[in-house]
Image (cartoon, rainbow, N blue to C red; front, side):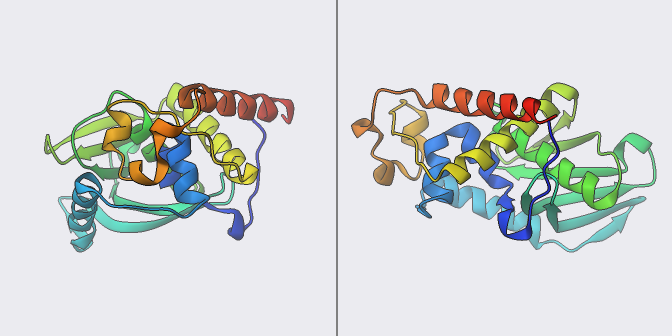
Amino acid sequence: MGVAVYAEDDLLPISALQHLLYCPRQCALIHLEQLWAENSLTVHGQHLHQRADSGKNELRDGVRTVRSLPLRSLKWGLIGKADIVEFRAEPIDMRCFPVEYKRGKPKAHDADRVQLCAQAFCLEEMLSTSVRSGALFYGKTRRRLDVPFDEPLRDLTQRTIAGLHELIASRVTPSAVYEKGKCDRCSLINLCMPKAGSRSSAANYLDRVLTHALTNGAASD
């Protein structure tokens, strides 16, 4: 994939990657149309992040914990922050270790893992280091889930980043498609009105966006 260098004004939120993988229309409604609504799930998620961010930076047992660390990548065109980044002297493969807090429990899809991997991309660029793994902390299980940043996840994250930039550049909001369960959990359901949408599949739309982005990227290598 070709390397792009983005200007400050072109940086997109890391969180938008999760929105895109969950639902392209949700991503467009939030990041193109600037729409937002709360429900019990989003409020719980905000509280969990606030608890993660409210603590002080600390040094304990050789681990320096930095909270709410600002992140930026001009290579990938991303901006955001990490809930927690742990810095260790050893072992070498865990010297820089991002931890993202999430409500609920581990999910079947890759949205959380992609968001964490994108944080690693930013840290690698900012610190000129290699970030090999991180962790997701889920509020329901109260446990960390280790996430290795292997090649398949890095490839998916790169393609999702390309797809996000393409979606935002297009200025087009995908049609609404109702998916039971997923739509019912979305805080934007009353703004989105998915039951009034077209018959095109949101999953197929995302697949087309990622495939097109990957094809264009390969062509520019």
